[in-house]
Amino acid sequence: MSTTPAGVVVTTPGRAGCARCAEGRGCGGGVLGRLAERKQQPTVEAANPTHCALSVGDHVVIGLRDEALIGASLLIYVWPLLSMLLFALSAHLILGWDEPMTTAAGVAGLAIGFIRVARQTRRQDHAARYRPVVLRRANGETFEQCSSDQPGL
Image (cartoon, helix red, strand yellow):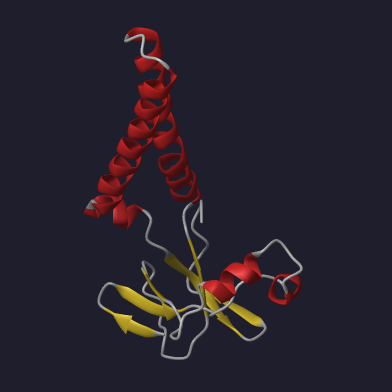
């Protein structure tokens, strides 16, 4: 972990999942983890809104706001699907296109939905909304609060 003016840079654990996943007998997280294995440990920049005194080597708990997780799920899943359905239904019911053209319109709608999601996620205010924050220090067995828990985190 290192500090920056905007917060802290946290090195995340390299592998995720349970022991069964690591053995290849679980949900598949271990297989996917081995396929996407990186040479370097991934890092995440997290905000430190409480200005908790942290130093290199400290273990911290980071989190996202509840509404950020729900909003991201809706954005990523719902917009492309709604766009696909809207295009396919419009092509079939309004324009009277046959099945291959309706399917093509649905695929085009799906692509447009993904493009919209990509543009939305590039916006600066959007990135700040989904930025993780430091919740507390987690050194060993003790959980030392940096400040009182913030609601929704």
